[in-house]
Image 1 (cartoon, helix red, strand yellow):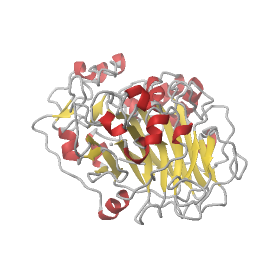
Image 2: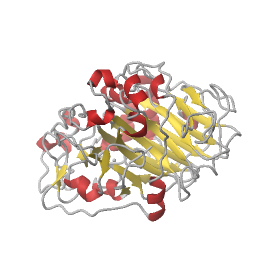
Image 3: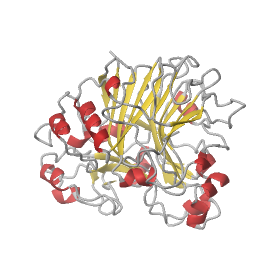
Image 4: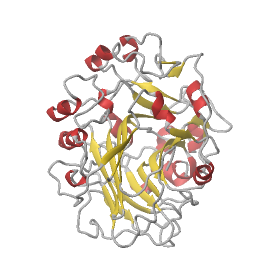
Length: 467
């Protein structure tokens, strides 16, 4: 659904600081290159010991708001008060699935892509320069107060940390070159594992008790929009997890009012759920075909939850859309929440063409997926036909995939409670009511206790287009 330092001398010691007590030193990968990269962090920023990155008192920042059409689109509710599939997943982090294998069947795609946007291409400040900060009331009734960029920086809700996903294999060694400090891979595009920084976006975990207005959080939307013939690769080291959280990495269309220009929820679930759901939201006239296969007979690894993408389909819950969920068959690569974080995260790849929308997932701890992902990273022109079996594939003649989805922007955010995570049935069925002892979601998130894991860390974000 949503939205998310140059010191005069950056020492190697700062690179070994732990974030919230969870990020461990990256050893030889980070400290030998601290001096080489000194000066790449944005002016006025420094690493903040024990919590996360923070701007120095001299840092200056400006408030950014979504453009007119985007502000209108972003303020439109996207998920209704009833969600049928929220209670249907267990909360066991180990019982999850990855949908990628090097020897899996081809998806049938024959087109290659060229890099158009690497959000990690320069110094860390450039990442947030490419996003607008949404600072209006939560459109899904969450107990959050979204901050503009200036306040998010001042409150240490955004910043930069050393890379967290470091995988060692021969394919990636070739991709990154012999020198880990080299920012260019074999294909000529920058990759996060070779960069100094990863991007952090979280919530306020310092205020012990928040009773009015909601707990501070971040929701960011890319300034650039995309259309059919787009491939998005997101390397995620950590995602918000735990009771009360509703994180999402997604794409929202415009300029028409929601859902006329479509929405793609790439990563989204709530509370202690362990399996990701990929969901699309549209107006009338868009539905997917097949049970466990798309119209061309190609399998996907997930489980079909709902078929009609129309948010007003009378046979589905309000605003539910069409959804394919992680099936839970592969425990080597948890796709969401606590299990995802314990398994060192993973990579989500989304392809959107006039023929359909496909999402692959590669877990960082899955050795087979690692081989496939290494080859993708090493390629100058990634070819989806080599990606293996996807987690989800929305296709068939029941939707005009190029018309129902247009001008999509990338959004990263962390909602708290709201119309899904805070719904009474979801709160109880997820086990959060019993686990926390809180009668309601809002009662729980008013206190900072238990929200330690409510933050994102991105190791890379790249967008390719067909040429």
